[in-house]
Image: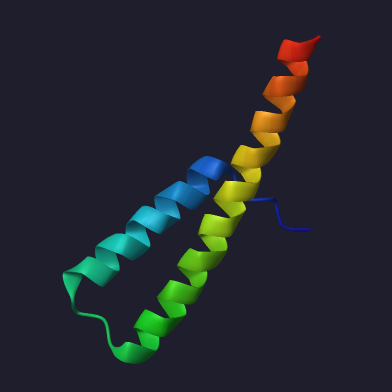
Amino acid sequence: MEKEMTYEQAVKRLEQIVAQIESGEMDIDSLASKLKEAKGLVEFCKDKLTKVETEVKKCLDM
């Protein structure tokens, strides 16, 4: 079973993808693939942040 990616790992990967896109050296097929990966990573990060926010609110309401 594969270990789940951490928030920090996802952000680092997003930074790598952005750098690749900004370099302008990517062909259109690679660009589409990287954008799809980036979209998934952004969704993953948003989910993680939402879960943490919910947990913090629970702790503060105790």
